Image (tube, rainbow, N blue to C red):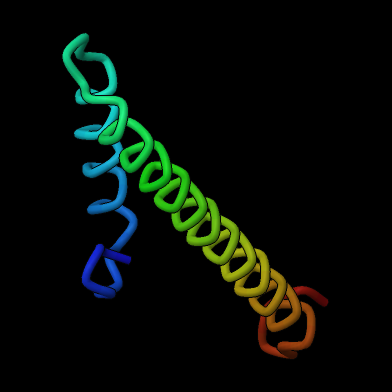
Length: 79
């Protein structure tokens, strides 16, 4: 989610994390800005983890459905 509440995708979140990391690696980052950037990075990491977990669950469910279909399909060629 962006600062204005807009939901962002995984790729956009990763790009923003890269920008934050670049900022954090600079020596001239203000301490107040540092805290804000670290909180934002934490939120983005949580978003990315959630998206990955959801994708893994979806793929697992789809594969299980396909395997079940192949076993239940009488025309699958496995006699």
